[in-house]
Length: 112
Image (cartoon, rainbow, N blue to C red; front, side, top):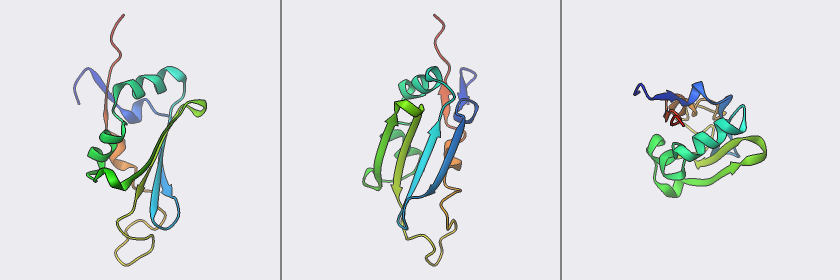
C-alpha cells in the first residue's frame, strides 16, 4: 500500500458478503457518510472491472453492480462456481468471501 492510500477497511463502515440464493454471493460495502462514499466511487476501486480483477473472475460472473446513493453503499453480486453446500464448498453461507476487499488501496483525496 502506498503512503498516499488507505485500505478500504479504513474508510468503509461495513464490508460483508452473503448468499443471494444457492448460486450467487452478494457483497455490500457501506460507507459512514456521503464524502467517503463519493471518494471511493470516484477512485474506481470498486468499479465492475476492478471487482472482477480483485476476485480474479471473468466479467460474465459479475451479475449485478449497483451504487446505491441513499445508503452510501456499493453492492455487487457474483455467480458462484458451484452451488452453496455442494461438495467442496468452503463457505456455505457466503459470509467469508469479502476478505479480498479489505485491503484494496484507496488513494487519498487530493489536497485542495
